[in-house]
Amino acid sequence: MLTTIEEASSVGASLEAGGILVLDVPGESVAYKSGLRRGDLILTVNQQPVKSLADFQRLTGVETSDD
Image 1 (cartoon, one colour):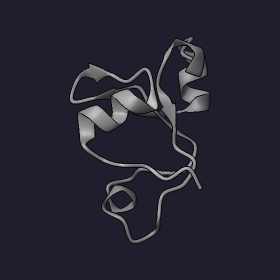
Image 2 (cartoon, rainbow, N blue to C red):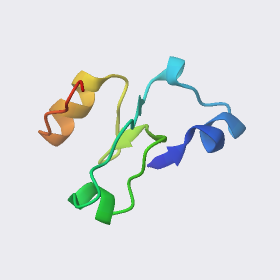
Image 3 (spheres, rainbow, N blue to C red):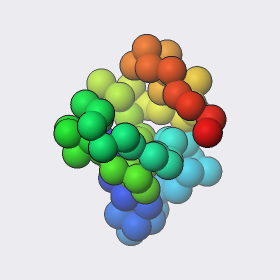
Image 4 (cartoon, one colour):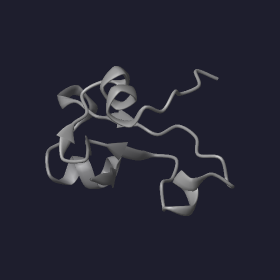
């Protein structure tokens, strides 16, 4: 499930409850072509909750950049 912060807020979700905020998506990436955008909030991956960056990396096998 991907949603924007505004949509998450409208149903009472917040980063405090878990999830990770997407800060950047390279324009030629598979993620971008799939619709992922800056400001999206990732709450689950394959129906598994994402409560931290470590959860996201474990569930996807994707390393992220701190830049």
